[in-house]
Image (cartoon, rainbow, N blue to C red):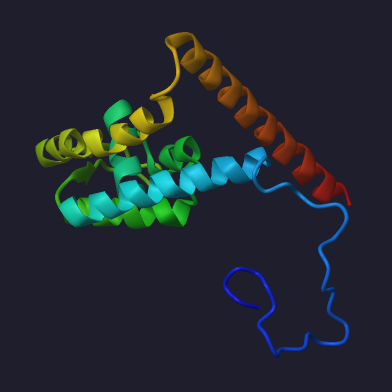
Length: 176
């Protein structure tokens, strides 16, 4: 196929290939999960690119710094759940941040050690914050305060429904 999804001239599809669009498909211009994913991907790419360019750190590193800024003394296990990130991803970011002198760990078992920003980490948070907030500005630019409140309420409700669904699917997997 060519880059636009069309067959290239002169190419014959395999005999078993379905060459016509299916009758029941998703309308890509009005499928909300696709639009949300595209928006999220674009915002994360922009943020990550800028954070790497300016600070040599990525979005996951920023998220860990931000989580520690919100709750000094949190554990990596808490941060993983709070951010919805794999523990290995959080562990890698924590190692990077400790290595850069931006985060310090207290004593305790691995994964449950309290983490704190250093003065350098607090400064890094302050420096990185406007880059992240720019994504917020892009999303909210055309919304009234009431619409913003409603949007955030709806997004929190949708997140809760996905968590509930994940629990139900896990229980079904365990039973089946």
